[in-house]
Amino acid sequence: MSNVTVQPSPPAPSRRPGSAPVEAGRGTRRRRKEAAPQFRGVVSPHTLKTPRGRVIYWIVLVTVVVGFTAAFVFPLYWMVTGALRSPEELAQMPPGFFPESLDFAVYAEAWDQLNLGQFLGNTLLYAGGALLFTLAVDVTAAYALSKLRPVLGNLVLGLMLATLMIPPMVILLPAYLTVKDLPILGWDLLNTPWAIWLPAAANGFYIFLLKRFFDSIPRELLEAAQIDGASASRILWSIVLPVSRPIIGVVSILSVVTVWKDFVWPLLVLPDSENMSISVGIASLSAQMPQNVLIAALVIASLPAIIVFFVFQRSIMAGLTAGSLKG
Amino acid sequence: MTTMTVKGSRHRTPGRFRRGVRRNLTAYGFLCGALICFAFFSWYPMVREILLSFQQTNFVDEPTWVGLENFGTVIDDAAFADAWINTAAFTGLALVFGYFVPFAAAIVLNELRHAKAYLRFVVYLPVMLPPAVGVLLFKWFYDPGPGLFNQILDLVNLPALSWLDSTDTALLSLVIVSTWMNLGTGTLIYLAALQSIPGELYEAAELDGAGLFKRVWHVTIPQTKLILMVMLLLQIVATMQVFIEPYLLTGGGPENATLTVAYLMYQYAFNFGDFGAGGALGLMLMLVLMVFSAFYLRISRDNQS
Image (cartoon, rainbow over all chains, first blue to last red; front, side, top):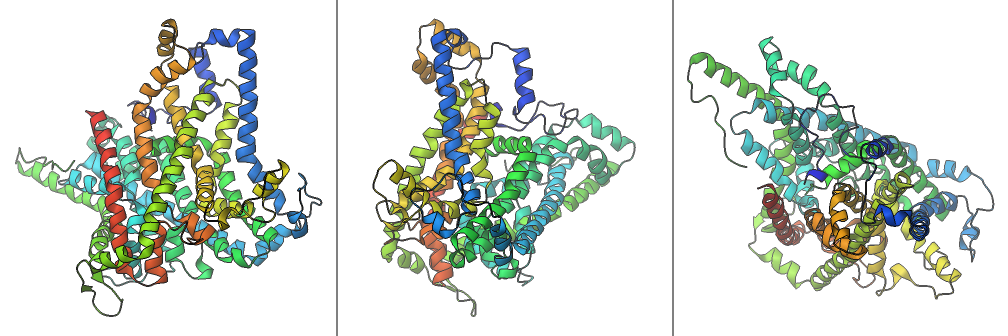
């Protein structure tokens, strides 16, 4: 399972943020080429050097590039340009590859008509708050379980990890009822950001990732600080956190992306239209909008995700291979 | 996993003891946020799920115990069999496309020396989109009049399909969206696994005279067997919970052709106000999914030891 874990080799501290977890990106590839110029897969390097091998290689390469572009980029191109087409142009058979005019006013129209500014602001609030709560709650918990090792700590950890075995859809109804009328306290969290923030923090997978990383921090590092009289929170803040930047980056990205993408939960717990997240808002208004306005709204809604992916590609792919262990 | 560690109980010198108490107090101070969040939003709902399915709840009076009545309601419903058959068919079809295709794609990607970063980026792009956006985008592509898919069919002189509006193609249409949105995850995970296979194994196989497909069969697959099993189970568990596709694309229709278990559960609770029946159906789904989760646990445990 070594190939699917975020866990780096034990001396974690000296790593550049984002560099370790997954062997992704250009830098790694180049490094590997230098170290082992003979990297090989199924096809032998000899076959690749023969003229026939070379021709086949290039045919396969071009086919794959064209195929992937058609399958994954073209639909997005069609979405971006589809918004620019008038309803008549959309109905045209066969459609032109380029839209007839480049009038971006439809995007402004979508922004106003669907109230996208508010939806985006709401989603940002939910994702940002969820990130803060997740970090505050899960980092401290993982630190306590990993380094302070209290009585019954393993039982607590076991119960937290057990929640990973419960498929989220299955406890959707009882979770909704809980948020609607919080036991003992009797609070109704529906239509408040708390309904997103607090459940987001109860994530066994993040605790698992963080604890496993903290476990690999050498004891001596903390003991030295302890002897100097540093308190537990001081050690967490000035030693553990700086050293754990890569894993905190992975957890942060995962938690923001998860809340941003979520649909069912915000659909249930934030039913009022002024509180809706972007996904739920667009879905709820989709039936009443002209086709091209709706598509423009979809473009606007997908932009933040694509930008985030562009910027944080490495952390996201690191989280993905870590995520393959997720239940 | 549930063994307790009681440390510091061997040496009961007062200083040590006091320090032990302090350490435990600090630890639980750090843990209390997580304990509260888990208790309210994970552990309690799990228990509540079981209670819910044996109770009648109307949110005014105290819930009453009704035994297995909710399960009877759910099973007697004509939609019950439809929902399970559709969910099984959806999961099966999603495996055909979404399980083998990413593995094959990863094997090919692993051989390429060019454009790798681009291909990796592109295949994961749909995964990053909010699912609601992807689904609504495909709803537009499926438009039975001038949708993109019918326009493409028209270009190659094939008859137009009614996609979401026909009982024959509706479920398949859902599978296509779902696969398009999730293909990247599997591809990248397999790719990471393939990169860790030592090249000497292929060399040795080649010296033994194994051809291309034999090398894949005898080296690649055995070397990635574990991750293949894990992904199979995780994918089954994930796709059996399918909700957003039928919710946004078809509303379960036409004629229940795309009604899934999770969507039926939602309908019981939020359209018919019967949380007991919804809870009972959810519990059944949980038991089915637990079987796969148990396999998953067993595999990862066997691998650790």
